[in-house]
Amino acid sequence: MEYNPRGHSDTEENSVDSIFNYVSYVLKRWWIVVIVAVVCAAIGFAYAKLSYVPKYSSNIKFVANNRSEGTIITGQSSSDLMAGGTLANNYRYLLTTTRGLLQLVADDVYSATGYRMTYIQIAECIKANVITDTSWVDLTVTTNDPDVSYAIAVAYTNHYDDFAQDAFPATTLKVVDKPYKADRPDSDRTKLLYTAAGLLLGAFITIAVFCLIVAAKDTLKSSDDINKRLDLKLLGSVGKVSKKNSKLPILITDKNTGFSFVETFKLIRTKVESFSAKENAKTFVITSTLEDEGKTTISCNLAIALAKNGKSVLLIDGDLRKPAVSSTLGIPAGGENGLYGIIKGDKSAADTVRYSEKYNLFLMLNGDNIPDAAEVLSDDKLGVTLSELEKEFDYIIIDSAPAGVIADTAILAAEADAIILVVREDTASVRRIRRTVEDLGTSNTEIVGCVYNIAEGNFTNRIKAYRGGKKYGYGYGYGYGYGYGYGQSKKNSKKK
Image (cartoon, rainbow, N blue to C red; front, side, top):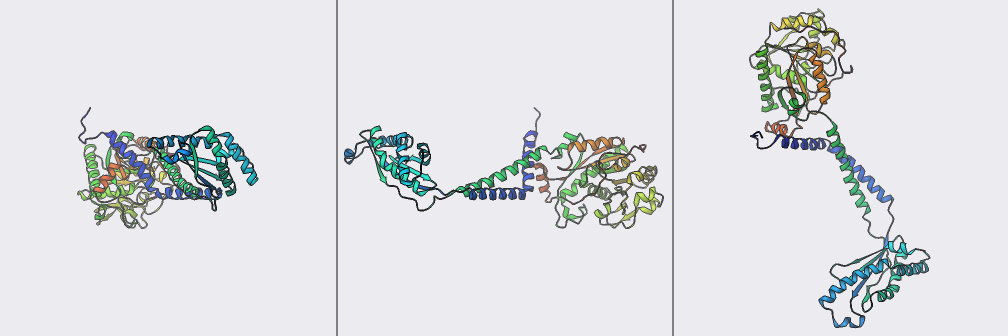
């Protein structure tokens, strides 16, 4: 067995992470659990109230003795007390199961109340218990009518002695507490029990459904899944950061994002620079499988990180349908149309590239939504334009559309040197991501690796994120309505 310096196996860690995934999913939806539990509790209470039937009880207490009545006054030894306890159990059985006694009680009840009952019904109404460590028998009669309950109890006091003497001669069974007619219903606990049962059942069912959803939801739950399930390299795991103002961008230039957030992009930058040096790669397309996975934030921060290292970096907004770079950086795009203007021949690269002193970045922004983006990007001018721009910059970072949503990214990727795939935790299914990777593979452009984004579900990642002192999260959405897959048949030659 290979030595593990961490002191525990990957299996143990995965088990902890798996449990945490379930707990985290439930806690994020705690309000649903509460609502369902309260609704079920209300249903339980309503059912108990509507189905409630008042019950009335009359009670008799007997005491058993293993001596005849004439010898009781001489006292009882410890053996007598033990024998009395055994005898009390025998009497309990006699009182509740003797058919003759039960039938006489039923006859008396009919005479007293006019209510006809069978001996079986009488047996169902009575309950006898022996009081622990005593020779006392406690018999309780419970029915829906106080008169019937009292009549049954009185009938027992009238007939029990004959059967007791026949069954156990030379012993005594005496009534020490005569029955009384109930003047109020018995205390009712069904409302409390049904309400509590409904509350617990509702919470349990909701949590069970959530657990089934987590088990069936085939998404990535930890950064380890990047290599294990996608067979791709991990460039970095970006933890979740919360900001008071969710409208502000999450950028490494903001000190409030936290040390770990900044260091993560330095790590990603180092890997990108290493790949670039080995493969002579300059142009990187950054994409994701679905919308709302944070690819634009990753694109902007990677470009800024490269620029901070003294590189000349051009950041291109290649998402022509839903441009977001300008809003992420907080720089108005105005009427600029970036790549679209160049490809259509309206502008030159010099006209569309601007410099931002704040970020030390060169930008090619796009302020318009281009509905026919796939046709525009299929133009041969795209490859020519990128080749010319590579002569002027050390790196070109292209923020593209989600590759699993529309075909634009596959076209861009064919003219780039490498692809970086952003995978948001617990968002896209593994099957969907794999299909995206396969589609991107048709461009013959290498996928450098993945950035595991907004990581919080994995227990290990959560601990790391808290050590960094922050959480990371941002709002970013698309409004695509173009379906899935690729309808683009034209292939562009791979630029060298």
